[in-house]
Image 1 (spheres, helix red, strand yellow):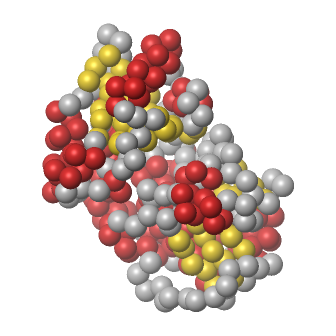
Image 2 (cartoon, helix red, strand yellow; image 1 turned 30 degrees about the vertical axis):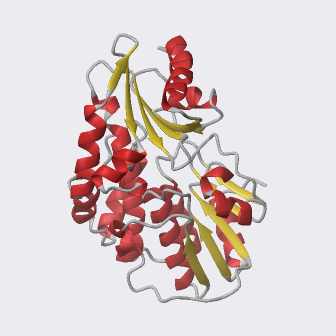
Length: 315
């Protein structure tokens, strides 16, 4: 059943013990949405916890600062910013894929199974949607909630630079800053600060970047050996996906991150009229017009061959 903001808030008010799930390899939007919603539900006297199948990077620790540990049996399970059950992570997919009560997401290609859905494909971030849900709940947006939502909005819009940024996005950001969001520090953490191990990983990946299709396609590969040599982890490599698209003349940038099993998670970023979601759909993936993802089986040359066969027709 599809819901609007008011009916979503009404549904949440009918329950008390919430488990909020984020996607694996968590980013600012899934975490910001989850912790903002958890904080708001706790304000209403309800119990709410956030869980992720992967370790959450330390850079997001401010989101749960001051939140006490709650132990209870969840009666209502929410998924935020999760477009497909595979994004829950292997263990969580097995445990929760058929138990999700409410699915809140901004991916128009969402395929997640749930009892209720709130999907808004033209929202810049799921955190935008959570902002309006919290207002419908009648909860004041305090500085902690504002920090969480601002992080989700800022990181999913590339610090308000991506084409998904709208006038509504800026209005929400302004309201969050007025509510006490520490916008300067958040943007500094996620856009102006690199760990030493990430900087080492970025250098290794850039050194091996390949250009194809008359330099309309840039491909960057992050291997398990690069993780080992740099000391970085997969959770630290999310921002690396934006680099190939930044090269002059590139219409599509693909970043292939090798998994421990030897397969590849592909992040696709596009410029101009090239639709990343349409391309990702050809590999059973999904996402947005300018940013999408999918998976390819290894080894590397096999994955590259499949990628080039499809993209050469489109570029």
